[in-house]
Length: 432
Figure 1 (cartoon, helix red, strand yellow):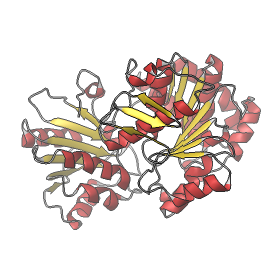
Figure 2 (spheres, helix red, strand yellow):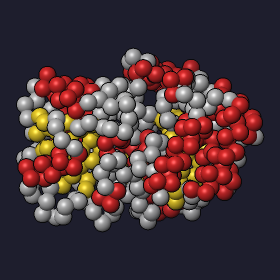
Figure 3 (tube, rainbow, N blue to C red):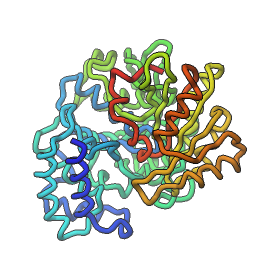
């Protein structure tokens, strides 16, 4: 499956315009949709999910809730971790290789007439597949920003902004206010929207909702989950909920947003309370605050996360802080050069005892291990190694920790995908 899927990704890249010519905007999508006869108003309810962190988790929770409620669900996410087919799940299963090829062949005609990006081509093919199989609800994850992202060419029935923090500043603006304005671009006048920054809501998100007459409901103000009682409350309702699948307080917030979306659309898509109170279809989202035990019960546990911005790193730091006194932490990190590397590493300095910085070979955007090491040393980290492969670093960390402590592997998707896929299966995963 992997090599075939790599070929699919290569095919899409060949169809797309040169990466250096990519510009955000909806004009190309709208023109391609006209050629392909794809309507902006899809025949099924559409949920758009944007935000800096937590998008994938909210999509996975929504997919599980609606599947458990008996609906045929289409869930579109990005980027993929190991193979291209991860980007679209239909009724809980990745769309087949042949189905992708069939739909991409039709999109290719439009791509020859309009210079489309990789993400635009993928989005068009994914939506065509959802239409072809007749999904009953479409969950679309925003790729970058919101206002000018390809999925925003489709009209939502509910929009979700998870969080707003610093990331992709070259594209979205230099500060949180600018980024929030772009994220809120998935709102529509009169269409319900949900927002998840409970402690520090971004002013530009709130202003956008007021300006455009968007009925916005906020986590912490209009709805929320009591983890002790395992109950969600909001909109005049109260219902029991299943515990988050992944670790950390942020996952309670993501779960609360997903339940709020289900409640918001309950008239069009009624879901019984039983479908949100237990997992009969466990959500899967590899590499997000995921605890693994690849070497067995007597070996170190591993915490894997694709955290690559300061907010995500703060969430990781909170997980490590909760384990204070449970042994040392060894971290393996690889990041892209265009990220806020210093800002991402800073929250973890107090919780990591030994660092291994790693090169990422499969993208020219990667920061070198030497650069990561220098940034850590400039920040005051002392036990830093920047030599060796991922395999060598894993073995060194395993020997250092023996059977205690935690091995943290984080940073770019490009790093996490180098870990063996088998480690992420249920048999080797463990609770936090």
